[in-house]
Length: 316
Image 1 (tube, rainbow, N blue to C red):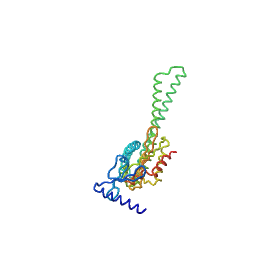
Image 2 (image 1 turned 180 degrees about the horizontal axis):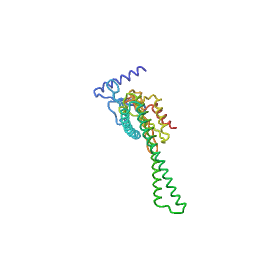
Image 3 (image 1 turned 90 degrees about the vertical axis):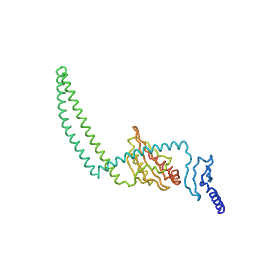
Image 4 (image 1 turned 45 degrees about the horizontal axis):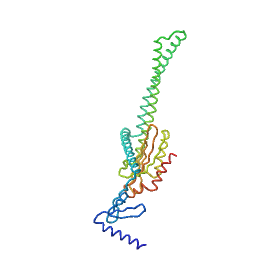
């Protein structure tokens, strides 16, 4: 066995020395698992993945295999996803920058929220007082109209006009109060979100978030669909899922999650993207790997396939 291995190695070394002048040597594996070496690629093997070796037999570049129609379609889908991710990221970074410039602490947010809340409360108090006046006026006009009806007389046009005007004023005032109370709810929600976001930003890592443009994508995508009423819970489950897989989150918003950029061959970079339409939402898991021979293998291995399969079962 040792003699055979030595013989094969000798042949490879001789072949390398003979091709040193050309400066290129290619290595590839066919459909039967047979390893081949050549200084030129024959047409029948041109669509296979191949490695370019230097004169010492070390891989210096890897040429990807030609993509199938399905892989080409998936690549286009991933590029479209990356554009969506980039848009979400830049919009959120702009909002985060404005938030950090506006508030130094959560107590600053509370102070502003309370100020706005009290201002609206004073408007509600005034509008509620006006409501009593409008209500009394409306009741008086209703009594006048009822009196004419009891006497069997036609209600005068002026009385009808006064009644309609009083009713319109009362209804408008009632709607203003409802709008002011809704503003209070919106303010409470907005500032609660701002406080949570500020807390997240202060606890985040120093690594600058990116869409991992220097990495390579796995052509496998996880996909979850949900109705609006269930998406918040599913989004939380998706976040928990990637952290249980050892991913280090460096950016988190209510539409996009990015993990640490993969550097080593066994690393995986994960991202979650939530896209909402009028009828439903979708949550996509994107996997990226280091741009290396080992990274490409990681993006295709069984663990990556299993990761996608487990993710797709979260909605079950």
